[in-house]
Amino acid sequence: MTLTAGPASTTSLRAATRAVYAAFIWSGFAMASWATRIPQIRDDLRLGPSQLGLVLVAIAAGSIVSLVLSGQIVARLGSRATVATMAVLLTVGLVVVATGYHLGVPPVVLGLFAFGFANGAWDVAMNVQGALVERHLERAIMPRFHAGYSVGTVAGALIGTAMVALKVPVTLHLSAVALLAGASTFFMVRTFLPDEAPASASSAPSSGGILRFWTEPRTLLVGVFVLAFAFTEGAGIDWISVAVIDGYHTPAAVGTLAFTVFLTAMTAGRWFGPALLDRYGRVPVVRTLAVIALAGLALFIFGPNTAVAYAGALLWGTGASLGFPVAMSAASDDPAKAAGRVSVVASIGYCAFLGGPPLIGLLGDHMSVLRALIVIPGLLTVAFLLAGVLRPLPAPASPDLVDGR
Image (cartoon, rainbow, N blue to C red):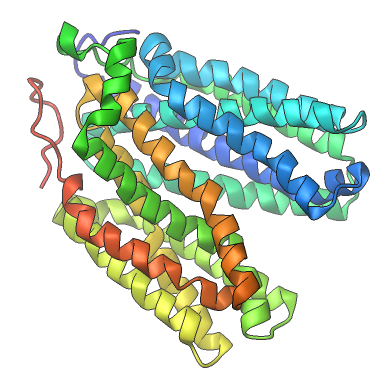
């Protein structure tokens, strides 16, 4: 892994900041672009709901395997080479899906597994680099990087919707997205900052060292915190539209607009949140946002009409905005151990994206989807109580590390 020679220059820091934004944006763009073409691929393969669900597990499986290994991968290759390598793998995986679905299910499963694997390691590496840039800037910026991911998903979804409306072939659309996202990221990451050296041999990320991060109480508690906020965010993304349509008996367009309100609020929270983090610190901000999310969920689930549900979606999205990125910063407080800890925290957090949709759906079969969302406040309460683990660790020897509160 490349070692730092000293503080980054202003020019190199600006270039690295732009590169991290690009990595987040293109990651979100690729994921959303794929999602827009799921219905067409499903129809061409003649898959039923349960069959489609099994095919989609390939992405989750690839991501989980990658997240477990990503600490070791980033420690060996460095964040720059990891993202570059995963950009190539993502391109290959998505092209295999785009062309292989004409041949049947197996090529799609193989391509999706590669796509998910690339996305998992890419995610950890860009968070490690984002935390490094944040330390050099000496101010909170990680939430804005995650806002970049949200912007990428919105752009990918809008362009994907246009491609569907214009009847652009799936193969042409997804192949173009794969090449554009992969090539752009591959070249942008050349301006990533060099990763910081382990402080000592004992902190070097050996194979045994990566495994021991799974035994650190603080790291595991940060992971549980992320799990709660990831569940809160993921449930909103997956179920808001359905909950409004079925629970408030509205047209589909009204439900989709509620989802847009949620996503916009979350993006805005991530963009403007760093100023609050710099002024008040991590713990007070995330606890306040947890309360805001709880209030939003109460309005959304129990509101008397659609207008109140919209207000709830706005508060819900705002409250959910900073939990994940702030926890990534907390996992990266010690630069020598950032790769291993981010890998553990992300692995735990991603379990919410795997288990959340089935849990809400199962409960929704026995009550309405709207009422099934009542499980989220319980997890948010846990996150509120655990927020203290996000307090920055004492800086190692380096004086340039950001002073936290």
